[in-house]
Length: 276
Image 1: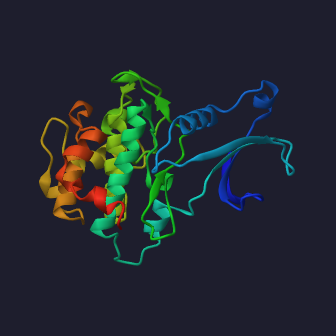
Image 2: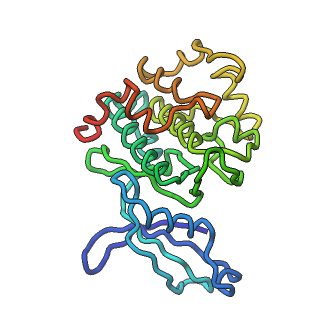
């Protein structure tokens, strides 16, 4: 069990997010930590990036309210996640194209950093992306409990990944080998969702999710169905960017670095990311 609250350091008065991870009696007896906690701590200790949440420190503390103890992760505090922010927009209101570009650049910059360190996030979604209150312009990727090291292309990994609405079709079909292209597909789903304020693919199970993908993108053996994509409420350049990301074959999907360096949609995004 995991819950997060805001606490203030009594010495520095700095606000931190305290992520409490409840330890089972078996874990306490065997001096074990949950795998998700080990992964998150390992990743955050090894990565420093302006668009990735920072780990301040870790503490093991007895609980005053229950028989179980907790492991506490003290993290950089950002007050709201991207899902809650977009959900709070007024009826018919959308994020500005400039802000969407800025968010896209920041997310891809963080993803590129992770992938350069051979780390897959595996659970990219709006609720795992935090933003600040000051202009809502700066974001950071959080929640690395499902992150994994991936040292070779198409490494065999577990199927324990990502929320249903954000994985590519191959993963939904129980592919046991995948690589960094997984996070790129999830990024595309996040981009679409924050642009027109609803999930791009909203299946209730794996099969239903596949049907949503096929209805919008066509079957994998056939080209994209432009008519369906044209119905999405977004700018033409953003729609083309999305089409260039949501490619069935992961080997044909561009990397985060290639998108940052080569795609015209992000030509001015580096500047926007620091001026919006």
